[in-house]
Length: 160
Image 1 (tube, rainbow, N blue to C red):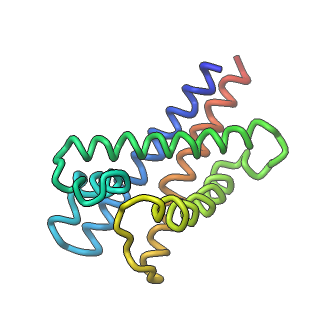
Image 2: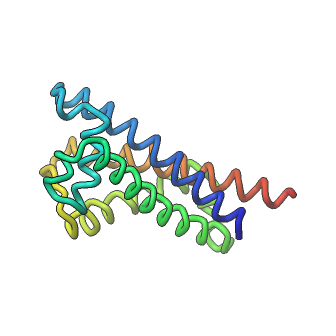
């Protein structure tokens, strides 16, 4: 049980770190606006799903709440993936690239169209560019690191 929790925590951390860095870079390139390119602002957006607009006035404390929220959500997705991976019914998940892309293709629309609208975060309009960017972020920079981490840790555990 402890090794499963460690695997989920590691996968959530790495997936969350990778997607956050990707999205911060994408914002910098896409908008060229100082306020939208800061990591703090991006993390405050995450916190705004719970706090609304007040998150942008909370400084680093609201940004850290955004990190915590991201880690919890990432851990839930990692736990779901690990549960599927360990059932041995879904062989596709044993390949971190295919399984990770599949995870991202599922995570992106669920987060964008189900989870975020429940909260208070402001959504950007759907455009082809935005959707492609979010799909790249969720597949290559979230799904693949999560899948690769979980696969490596479960294989290592199986060898011991």
